[in-house]
Image 1 (cartoon, rainbow, N blue to C red):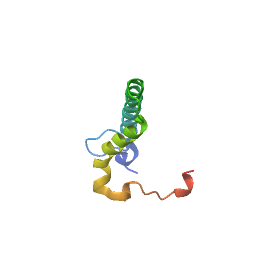
Image 2 (image 1 turned 180 degrees about the vertical axis):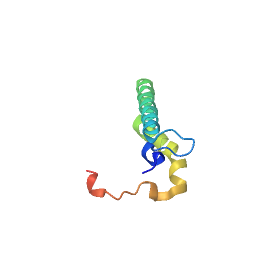
Image 3 (image 1 turned 90 degrees about the horizontal axis):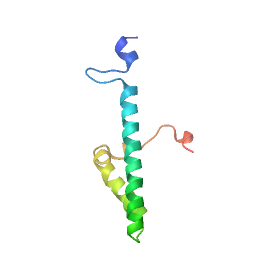
Length: 82
């Protein structure tokens, strides 16, 4: 097995584990920010904030989902998703 294959690196990129950790941290910060915004808005507005929260999340995901279609969401291990 080559060194490149073991390290998870491709030319000029960080190892896969570092990229995964980065995106997990970005996701956690985004989620925490969303919770803070929802708490602030819910104290000021008397509307269903959850709908708008998930609608904005869908809008944020659309650029990733549209080019690849439903293939992005398809899994080969459906039995493992309980």
